[in-house]
Length: 70
Length: 177
Image (tube, rainbow over the protein chains, first blue to last red):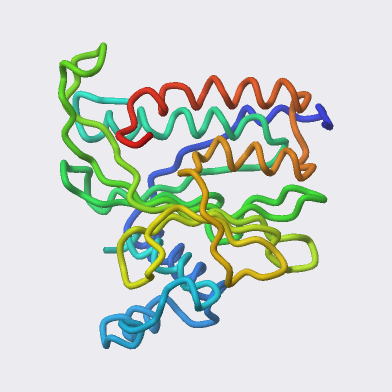
């Protein structure tokens, strides 16, 4: 324990559609090294249709985040 | 926690999570995307600290995302008489160690094409293996971070006590055991 700084400032922020798109993009870049729009293009094209989401590192995080933008 | 309106149900759902995060001595923020407005049957997601996660010092970085839906609830089933609540649809929490490896991952994704629809853990060193778990609350996840020496704003015992208190309403109103 540090006890040096109370984290009393935890915020809940409602993000705009553009901010949500930027957030989704950041998660895609972090996990799959591609842009959010590129991931959605591949997703819509069915590229991940046969993928076990758990067998591709980072894919679960990205799939969960789709609800940020759709 | 139930609410009278979709907006109120979401706020009531997120408030205990916000409260739970206060035990961590870290800069934390929950981002939620209303996508034009909350409505019954709508599916949404929240993310902890944007795409960068929450830096927890020697414990590493916590990444957390949850999908949720606003659903009906029986007003007679809650003390407030409210008709709506939030139901979790999936969660993904992971603690990434300072060396960049994932210390643990907590997953529940009952939809989609994974054959593993039950809540599970992926633990180092073999992250491909699924270890069945209970449905992990976010409070439990924070408790795991605390056990992994995340900086706290109070003692570990106090943190676990506070997390139990914030978790209690969720356990009362959730639809799963």
